Amino acid sequence: MQNKFTHQQRLVVKPNYKQALFIKALADWAKRVIAYGGGGRAGKSYMNLVAIINRAIMCPGDEIAICRKVQKDLKHTIRRQFIELLPPSLLIEDKIEDGVTIIRTVDERYPSYIYWFGLDERQRIGSRAFSIVVYEEGTEFEAADFTYMYTRLSHTLPIKFWDDLPDETKQ
Image 1 (cartoon, one colour):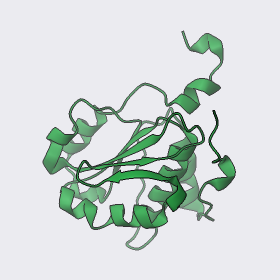
Image 2: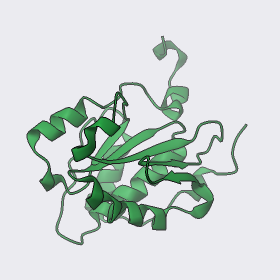
Image 3: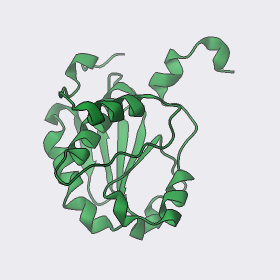
């Protein structure tokens, strides 16, 4: 059963050149690491959120991690901006204490999940794997942090990507 949400209800923005490159890279499943930088107040976090929301809507069952070095910093910055940016009709549940936001997708059977955590609370991650890991304020992280989160990347395709593959590649 298809949901009432369609690709036409994604967030629409007019990106600059660097933002457009980022969006294109994020849509390419083969790209496992994308470094996206720029000056202060250049729109990095905003573009991250637009891309994450759109991908979550269009890829039912997606599991996305957004992290900072310290959990409390995340709650007061990008998470607040995310909730303000997310159309209210897409929000299923925002479990602040559990660190997960569940949103509607183009297929109502499979919501997408956005996980919020600081690496100071790694135990909250458990054995969970993610299709995307977003480091908010990447300069806060050390090489060991990047290595740890890289091991949390899933090699299972979200439902949308899986359904679009030719049958002979699904074996």
